[in-house]
Length: 192
Image (cartoon, rainbow, N blue to C red; front, side, top):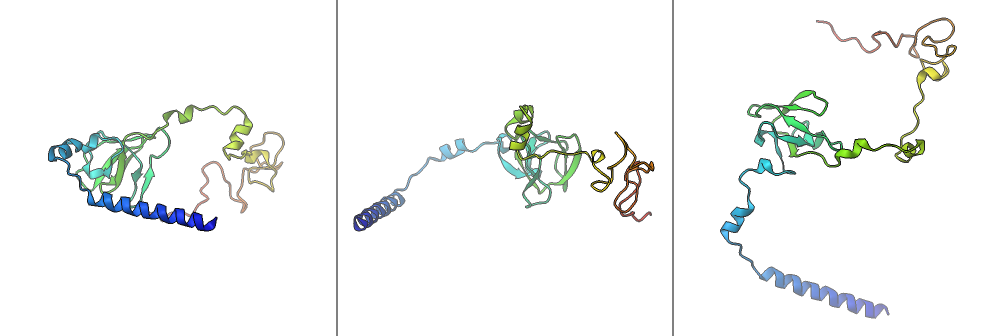
């Protein structure tokens, strides 16, 4: 049994080698004007083309944009999103309008893909029940105000209390600093 399988496999391998060597010997020539018809005069009009921003025109719709040259696409990758080139990328930087409306300067050597990301109706999908959210791997979110003081800085109080506990103190970090009302909790920047 094993010997017959081995012979069949060896015969198949030999046939494949003969076929590939015959295919390599055959040379096909394509006429010059056929090559020219395959090439497009304007590569910017091809949806799905990936190229540096410097070689794109103003008003081009793009997605999958790099932030640093050679880093790989980082911006505008969600379903149905796209960005637009606002100014001609002649200098070192190119002005791009992101889907949020923010205008960002990006290095002209960075690459992007022409067109819109597929599946534009992704955001229109309704979740049928709470379990549907769990199927997608999203766990429930509990508000900090609904917790106890030991579980969260916003926890404690009677009823819907915005103050922590009965003493009327505002929400605090674990180190006692207020967390709301614009109180600066992060490292202070050097003032000029």
